[in-house]
Amino acid sequence: MRHPIDPKIDCVFKALLGTENNRRLLLHFLNAVLGTDLPAPVVEVEILNPFNEREFIDDKLSIVDVKARDEQGRIYQVEIQLLVVPDLPARILYGWADLYSAQLQSGQDYGALKPTYSIWLLGENLRPAVPEYVHRLRMRDEQGRGLIDHGGIWLLELGKFAAGQGAGAEVDTELNRWLRFFTEGERLDESELPNWMQTEEMQQAMTTLKGFSEKEREYHAYQSRQNYLRQQRSIQRHMDELQAAEEQARAAAEQARAAAEQARAAAEQARAAQEQERAEKDAALQREAAALAEIERLRRLLADRPGDE
Image: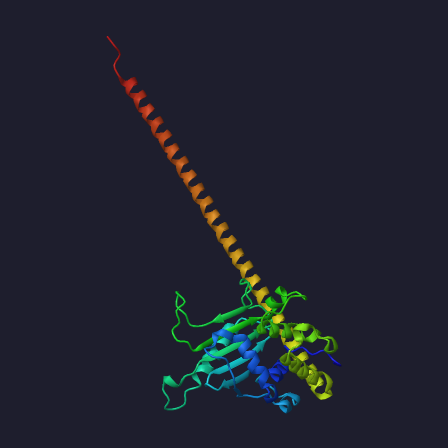
């Protein structure tokens, strides 16, 4: 290819899985990700918001996820998110809930609802403390029993997958094949593809990348989109740094307030100790004065006593 193309750039991602020409890739991807979690494999799919090349070239592409419905009415959403921002979990859940509830038309009851599956590929780790790179989130109780088997949310953390898969690692599942394609696709040499890329689906995926690489208008638009995403990442990282600095400043101010409170408490304790010491000194002086007065009284009594005959 003339230019390396990153399949994680959102417009390329949608061209891979959201075009009529690549419906076969979407079918393969859905079955690879969901696998045995589906009661039956997906055999036919309708793309509800297909990729529009002209909108992309005119830089008007704003909806970069892929929405689809299969032959049984099940709903699918596939989206890629390169940056993990603080409100992303809420956005993911809201997107699934909105897609699930939007199925009902006026006059329909809840029986018309179909399972809804939301798949997110993440460029950064959302759950860094958890070693697994695939997370299946469905409505379960504490014993793992489901409320209703109506789909759920699948999170695929590409960073963890890339870190755990060496260059010579075997591709043992179709899911891992896709994840490896998304993590290594930009570095692939079309003339010397590795063994794990020697499938019809991966060859078709490479053809899509080649289209972005070889066509000048598409490549320039791809570059524009890539630069835009880089700017967004820079802005987000700057905001994260500002937020971290603000949190550090708040923590420092809180520590300063705590230190001031401790100092005031120590001063209060010192003043109280001084007051107690002064009170004890005054009490001792009073006792001494009382003792001296008593001695003087007794001396006078002895002085006034008549002498012995």
